[in-house]
Image 1: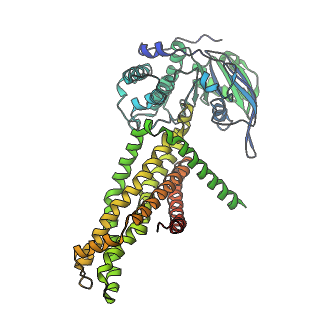
Image 2: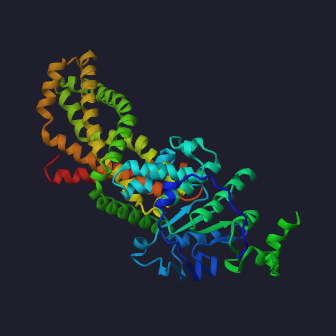
Image 3: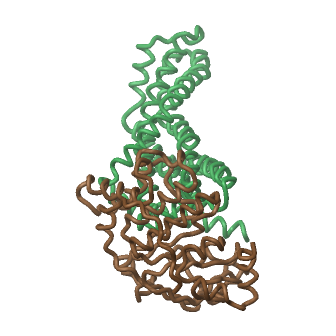
Length: 265
Length: 255
């Protein structure tokens, strides 16, 4: 794998780092197919992701990246094919008892009627993870610290910028103590500065939390900035999968067409 | 054929959501704070307007019926007529229309917005059941609030009728005569009849509004479409069910 430069770290978040105890898991997708009416979106996706890896699924808009992510988290049912996380099929009845998957949505999907703190604490409170709400708040504030939003716990989501919302959503996913985090277009709609901040956050998480991450994006710069390996999705199939160096050197015309302009500039 | 399949799909979806909501009512106590919050919202949104509507509805009933009764020399019965009309029919239907318009529309808009902006999906990824978390508290709050609102509107409506009966020179029935006649004619059974209807209307409005909200797909424009759909469907179902519930109550000698 390509050695990535060290990510920036703000040193915050000791409690959340101590609290995170999940074992990172691998993901194995075999011949995944999905159609919506006559539109065949996924045409046999095969993908194997190692534990602790950050894999970026890169592709043009409308190639089925988000649909693939929604299958991995169980929001969509495939027509055929299997998805195994940590060696267990996600459709097994007890899967959710053994594995927790966090997801950061493209729209952040924060609850507008809840403060930042209540948004991040929602999972812990609803599942009664801690008897004492003070412990919940400690973890929540620590998670907000790790995403650089220590002072924002009482703010309503409508008062936050797009990048801040994305970071709150990351904190919300982190407190679930997940085995795997999925990111759907984490930089979509953000300015270049904020895109860089989110990219740093993804790398920081990879370095400090060592969690398996799957990032779906069409942002080539972000993909090469955060990925351990990159999968190129085109026409509902993975056409190339490898390290950023491998992808850069790849001779596949479709891959070159997608990534080359970025390096010529 | 498309219309028929849509009818069965929507009906099936509404019934299935109703059954799932009933199942999640087992979590009543652990969600008491959410139910209370919904009750406060419903109260805040309906009590002032409900009072105004009830006052004038009672008044217009007395205004229409009073002179006719006076022509036959039985104007002292205006209290009973206004009282029974409000308790059995007008109170529950008016309250249901008010709740569908103000509360049901807000429920549909909120849930539609949550669907469009992936918040429902976010709940699912956190293994939080959206029916338990979002629908059940709204369902219980509406079913509890609507009968309470009916009692409140009945009492104000009676008062509206009493004022008009007194100040209208063609009727001129004193408050004591009006309320004595009302007390003679409006019995406990009539009261219960209205409350049963109100509770059923509460079920219809909350389930229909939540169903339409949760099924919203697309962008922000669909949120507005869903609100209209929820309100119209609630109105239609309230009036259709009003007829059948009345038939059943008559059959059971409760009307």
